[in-house]
Image 1 (cartoon, rainbow, N blue to C red):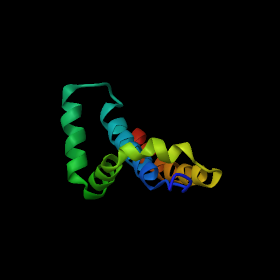
Image 2 (image 1 turned 90 degrees about the horizontal axis):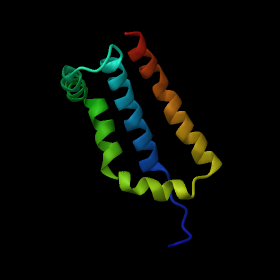
Image 3 (image 1 turned 30 degrees about the horizontal axis):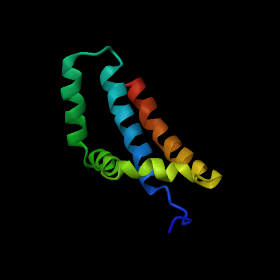
Image 4 (image 1 turned 90 degrees about the vertical axis):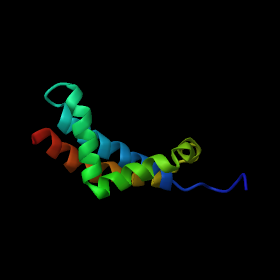
Length: 97
């Protein structure tokens, strides 16, 4: 139905995937970009089943995200913020490692 409210599952997965990738790239690129960083980032993704699954989920239905965002409620915005906040320690750890 056209009036049916969409959820934000794919958007939450996309946010989580982007932040997982951001943490990996932060760790690999904090000393400057080198071609070897790409290989190391891919190795880090493949070595961690949970991170790999989050990235795969993020990409699986990414095309649904724009439609989900069109009818985003305040509650859903808070849910997305909670997803982002949950990933901040990982990014901070990457900066400090």
